[in-house]
Image 1 (cartoon, rainbow, N blue to C red):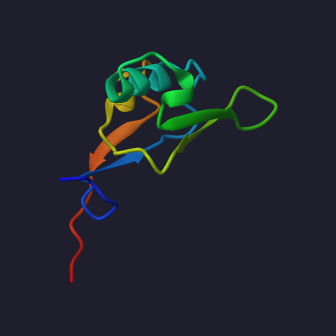
Image 2: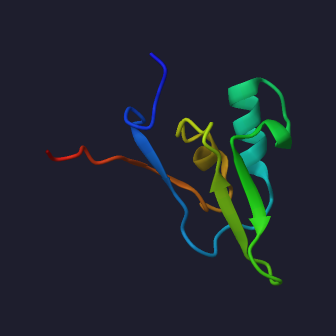
Image 3: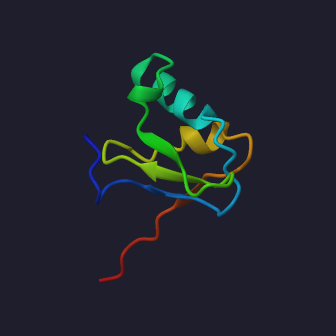
Length: 88
């Protein structure tokens, strides 16, 4: 079954000011999803937030919320948490 926005079991959470810009998350993502170490094939992007040393983590629509990036982040800048079920 292909995952869609409604079936993704996790949400990726980004605590502020923890990202060092090391790109380990991108390498882990590309290796586990595409089988190669390639920054371009990762399902997320890291960009400088301001002129200082702060970085912004952006997840692309192709991200499947698998959490590999969170597992391999040496700075705990990405966290994987279970989505709450919607109450109808």
